[in-house]
Length: 129
Image: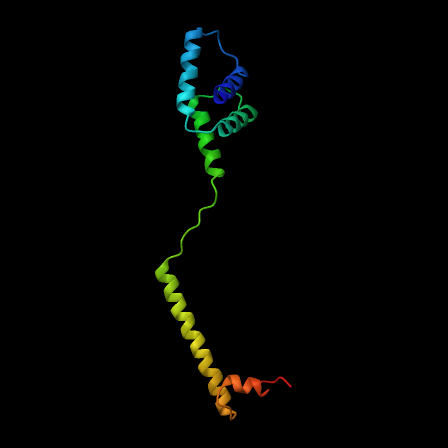
């Protein structure tokens, strides 16, 4: 019923000719049916936005459009799963670069008389004194 109250309040701000009570009830049913997919908070926000920004009486489609916009804005961010194949390829590439760097460090250490880079580090051959 909260949605109906929001709609009635919104429409009361706009002048209209006196309409038959049965016609008003039928219109209210249409509004409620067409807005039933939205929670009352979204309808209330859409009605408030319309009231503050428009000078003409809204049609159901106007408020539905606002409701869709509000709902879209308030959706939580969606986690997009990374492409597994690209991730695997990047990991293989990175692993290759790490292995290449390790081989370079060990080559550097052997050129200086150490069996490997770890030993060169332990012996202080890398500039640490």
